Length: 324
Figure (tube, rainbow, N blue to C red):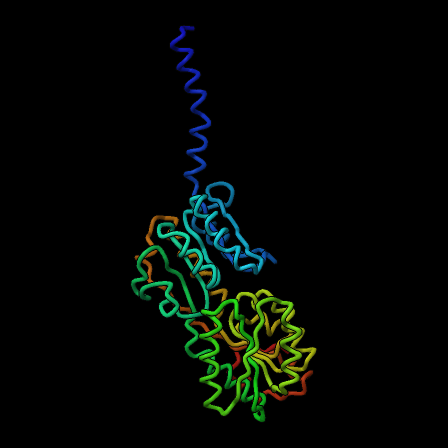
């Protein structure tokens, strides 16, 4: 073999790792950013959406999961890591994650899903024209707080004081929730006691305080921490005999009295559909923010009976599901 051919051959061999790395970089990466913990498959709808769009995890797409385990100060580093890995799109599944992801990159597309007004919260410029690199789906909660208060008032018509559970570590969400609930409660002559929980260790204190205040009911605000601990919250409301309402249907399924809020499975589907469109080349700036339109009321009649409560027939008639 001539020396020139031999050297050329070595060059070709040496190029193979570079080619392989280039091919790996070409594989799209979906970043999944969440403030909470990985207690179960984070987003089963995501894998189905990928499959329907011709993607298979580990073959022609990669998913990088990042969980802060409720240590919010970890979120910036987790988001920065997804940026360093050159994620094709980042799915931010709660408000804190969306805010952090937006601060971490102005170029990588971000698809968010959370309860709240993304314009008021400064996530996007407008719903129709989100601009920049961010879009997603949200529940504006415009009518949720009044309906929650009305439902509580129907079930406990003698109530004068109610508690509101919020997470002070998530001020963008908690401040808006407090404002909406207090405004709705005032119309019915109810006093609202705001109770803070930023970790699950605070829950027992919250319920002990409810008893001391002689509050007749509890409204659990929308927050990723609460959504991640619905079994625990449902058990506590049952143990302390507190009629409670929550925006997440799993709360009623876990033994809580009622849930009233958006169908979060619907939010998952919309967010995943947007992520697929981004993978195929569409720009977030061209995808208007979608709003969840399906709101559902779930009543746990078994819990109501255990608490000695009678659910009015008018309320039962409007329920999307009654758990016997």
